[in-house]
Image (cartoon, rainbow, N blue to C red; front, side):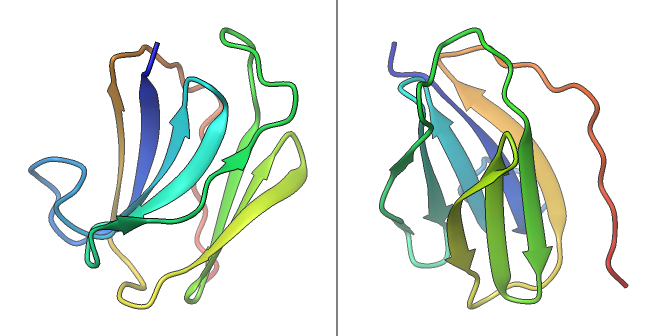
Length: 111
């Protein structure tokens, strides 16, 4: 369907919906990946996960270093984002019209 899941990053408001602060990386049910910048209320261009299949496990790695965010899928860098507004904040997971699972979650600090 037209479902999606997202990882909200650097959120300065820990409650409310996924659009209320920071930005989110979204993955569509078609394998598209893009960022939603809630400060400027706009999205980045979409990139496509190669040979995407619904129901298949994918390893995502998100590296947030300073203002730069890099996203890797199955070890391959697929997109980047420059965050002009936030350097820290909460992390969230959300979805719309879909189910998703998270396994082996690891969050580390580079401080």
